[in-house]
Image (cartoon, rainbow, N blue to C red; front, side):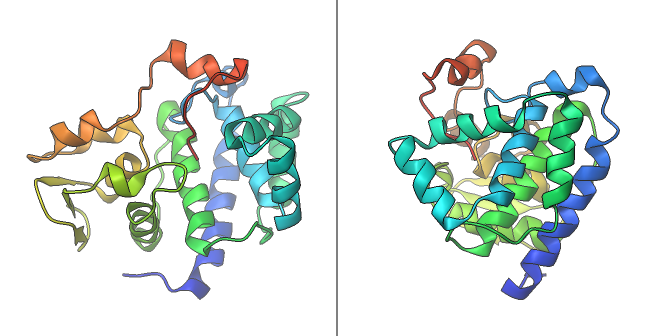
Length: 231
């Protein structure tokens, strides 16, 4: 099932609310667990989601100019702002923004992708299972596989055939990579955690295209030396 544009914001809001219910239950130690998003803790990712949900086009331009168009630096500054105080403060800000439709210019699929992918960035390392709407997963995968902006999804899956095993979705030509739709979305967006559930002749090549996720390197963004950006 494909999601029409008018369906996307209700899905975004529903997925934010579902994530809110999950993070409300977290123990103090869980907030410092590293997420699937390189270099960012669970709390960092929720802070980034809150900042994104509040950002207008004017905010985006102002912050980008201030950061000299270094989007990693811009994101890190937002995370710093939204992680002051206790984790409950970050949760409260996110709660106030779950139904926001404010965003910089860009296709609605980008904001659905922000919500779904970052929610899984938080949930998977914590062992929290969630059933995402299949329409949301396919809309996100189709968006990211066609775009190289920031995360390089188009380049990452070029020359590969991607086939979902839990829905009727298959795209591309070349060596096949098959598996659950959620795991395909993760690898398209550069999350190596999705590889374990995939099979096919194209998995080895896809693995070689994954960004480095080593812990030592992942912490470098806090020192302002990160070499990549992950949304």
